[in-house]
Image (cartoon, rainbow, N blue to C red; front, side, top):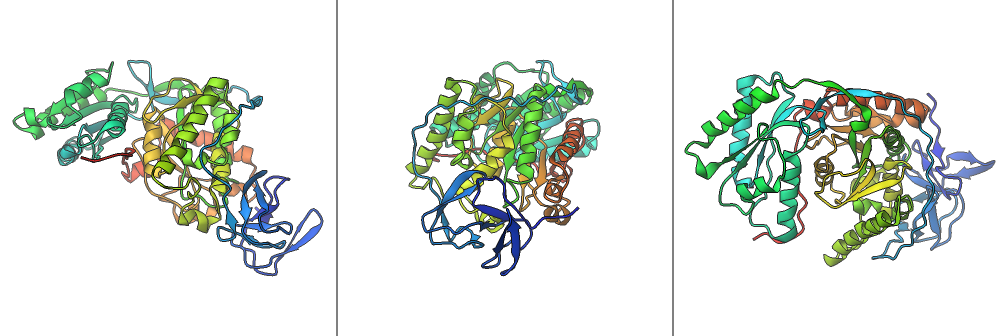
Length: 497
């Protein structure tokens, strides 16, 4: 496939993105004009299509992504040292609803999943050991290893101890965040069985936590309080063997694609993220929603600069108001800690061609396509409605991915231009923005979207991507599962006693 040298994403843009490294003096042609590179422009980075004066807005994706700090002649490299964010503090917004009409047909696709007693569906059948407090991390790790050794890991998908450092010495929102995430894990349908292990003297008291769960299946959720048993290892193994006997009897059955719930996440982004992988996820998100399924977009700080696009796609005024609160509450969180709201792109993002938070946000939000926003979720809350949802969580990869799993997503689709090996407690499927990364890191990357910029039609890539996701939902493991890279991280904002 032939790769072009540059791409102007939107006809209104006054910059283009270099697809290949462009040396100084390289000439490209656009609309009959010849543009000569004033300096070397790395692949994924921007260059000016016209002369820009100091203070002019730079337009990408059809929207401003910041203003120039110096005059930039046509063919200049635009990057973080000559471009500054337009973002400020908390804003007032007006609801200007748009009409969405995607006209995507239903295809009656299915996958092989696990039907749970409460009507939910899981795409994995695992045993999880979850501590109410970090003090018992050593115990649960030993229990998981012993059960894996005893059973050989046969008949179920995995046995995992999910350690964390919280559950005690926390106050207010921090304590509540911990309880919510742990509750969500216990109730997640990807877990066929759960052993909750407490110490006994922690703030997150096991008996109170049991009540906090609400309705649960006592055959599949067991409890052990280490201070209340003579031998916590023997008692833990007894309970785990009972769980294993139950979980190992579960079998997959055909389930409609409408039951699938998918989290949308990006990290280690580059200049291709908003051209290849993120639009691919957007096309898939719209398709899944049209099938009656659910997708969830989070990373609220990475919506700053593109938030009005989401607000105006809210199904009604109530959802618009909730989205405004979602955005402004996170801005208040930044400002309350003395931090600016626009200093988000990481060193890796900048090296990859993302210069401002608006630049990142306009690419980031493409992951959710063009569907209506049907729900807005506070951190730690579980999904209530089908369709596209927005979830409150920070941009941090592991915290955000954990939050996506905890709201009820069966898997997380994670786009990346720099690469990352991590995974949370549901399958975390990595989508590369460029073919070079996919070739260098096949043990990290599960699907390559870089072929889009090389000429493969987006629609064809999305068809392959959809087929692959249904295979993953039916049991095909992704890289983080095969390597055992499974972790959780809980959002902490306050005081530790």
